[in-house]
Structures are given as structure tokens and as C-alpha cells.
Amino acid sequence: MKRGSELNELIGYRLQLAYSTAIEDVRVKLEPLGITPPKLIALILIRDNPGCGQTWLGNALRVNRSSAMKIVNELVKRDLIERRAGRDLRSNALHLSKNGAVRIHAMLDVVREADTRITQRLSSADRSTLLRLLNAITADPGVAQEN
Amino acid sequence: MKRGSELNELIGYRLQLAYSTAIEDVRVKLEPLGITPPKLIALILIRDNPGCGQTWLGNALRVNRSSAMKIVNELVKRDLIERRAGRDLRSNALHLSKNGAVRIHAMLDVVREADTRITQRLSSADRSTLLRLLNAITADPGVAQEN
DNA sequence: TATTGTTATACTCTATAACTATA
DNA sequence: TATAGTTATAGAGTATAACAATA
Image (cartoon, rainbow over all chains, first blue to last red; front, top):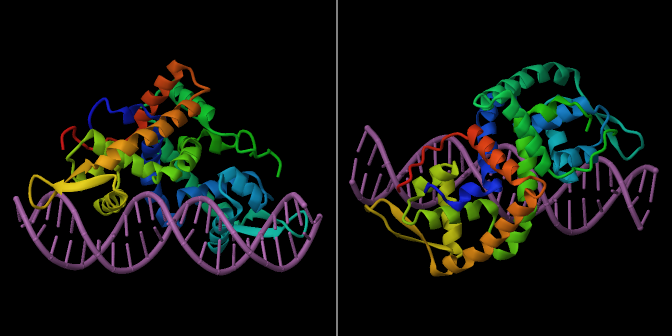
């Protein structure tokens, strides 16, 4: 690409490139474990917020209820999570299954290793700075701490 | 989400959230102009590298030839670019069409405006830092300056 | 009325594999 | 043999719209 292209000054473009770099090989390494990066995010969210509902999960993932539903269906099908009775008859309470609680460790190893590799050219201070700056441009999902 | 979740420390996760924030409303605002963010990236690349081929474009976009083909087809169909004869009988030379050269300005206005809004919480120094750090974690596409 | 989950449908983006023409 | 483009097909991710059950 031509140097000095205005493209290189666009945050949105650079974010897309960085993101696609970041997930490229984590996707490959997660595949044998039967999960994709977006679904692993959902799995971690459910682990960290046991009993959450699908609408809450959708908000946390910034997708709509219907998309959250599809993700949950996939995770249930693979016996990584289960739907239990929620606080009223409309809602589900999502929890890791026994199998999911076991399998998540190997999955997390993959993403942690990838995270280290991705930021290997960054100092510790740079890494913190990057997290801070990314947070500054990320919209508030409006997801409360409680479910 | 629970505070202190390890999710918040993962660069890949934060990148995904920042990216989805960044393109959310630019996508909406580009829609009436008949283009999507990824296709606009391709359009800008073609403008800045006139005469480039589809394989080159695919490398620049980090997609394979087949995906680049689909993008090019769409842009041609909307009369934003045209395929001209390339340097040999196998290859195309991609150029903006007359219509594309006109229409690209309004599209760029949208992304520039969005870029400003996205980074409004960042100082000028922070913005430069963010670009530098994103660049550090982005893989080399192996795309030369020349076509 | 509002909320939760659900279903049906469709679109965008990307990939793989096999093919043709040209180099 | 290698490269550029093409085609067919498939899968992941997301969205909209309409619906049922419950609040």
C-alpha cells in the first residue's frame, strides 16, 4: 500500500487490521477445541456472571437477543453451558455445564497464550496504555454488574 | 459485567469491542450511500493504488482472492470501480470509475466524521499513541507499495 | 404494555476447492 | 509449474420482524 495513505490515519481501519491479526491464529487454535472466539467470549461471560439471562448476555456481547440466542444454542448443543430456570418463568439462568467448566481451561490457555504473543512487541506500560485507550473509544454497553 | 473479569485484560476482547463500537454507526451512515465499511476500505485502496490487481487487493485487505473477487464484483456492479486491462492477459487493473471518483467524497466525509467522534475522548497525543500501538500488533500484510 | 425468549428468514463477510487462461 | 482470475458452495456472525408466554 502507498505510504501516507489517509487510510493509515483512520482509527477504524487500524482497529480492524489489529483485530483481524489478533484473532487470526487464535481462531485456528480454538477450532480443535470446538469453539470460536466470539463463542468463547460468551462462555467466559457466563462463567463470570452465572445465572445471567440471554438478553443480558446479548447486551454484554453487543448483539441482539436473536443473535445471543443462536450463540447460547450452540454452546448448549456442545454441552458447554446449560439453561436453568431463571428468576421468573420467562427467563433462563445460564450456567456452565460440568463439561464446560472443565473444557474452558484449555480454551483459556489458548487465548492467554495468543494475547501474550500479540503484545510481545509491546512493553508492559504500552500494554496498559493500549487497554486504556481502547476502553476510551468503546461504547458503554449498559450492562450492569448484576444479572 | 463483573468488574475485574479477566476478560477485561484480554487485548483481543477489547479490540473486538472497540472495533464494533467504531463501525457501528459508520455502517448505518454509509448504508444510504450504498456501501459498507469493508467495501469502502477496498475503494480507498483502489483509489490510492490505481491499476492494482485483485490478488494485490486481497493481500492488502487480508482476505483471499475469492473474497477480493466478491468485493470487486460488488463495487463494479455499483459502478464505483471498473476493471481495465492489466499488465498481462491474466490480470485486471482496477480503477475508480467516474461515478466512483465523485461518490467517494461523501463516503470519506462519513468515515472522517466518525473517526473524529470515536476519538473525541482522546487527546491528540493519545490518538497518535493508539495508532502506534495498533500498528505494533498488526501483522505485516506483505503488500508492497507498488502494484 | 413491556420483557424474555423464540422462530423464520436474509444479508454480509470470509473461506475452501476446483477450474480456466495465461505466464 | 506458477499465477490471476473465476465459480460454486459453505459456514460464521449478525440483523429484522413477527410471535408466544409471562410480567
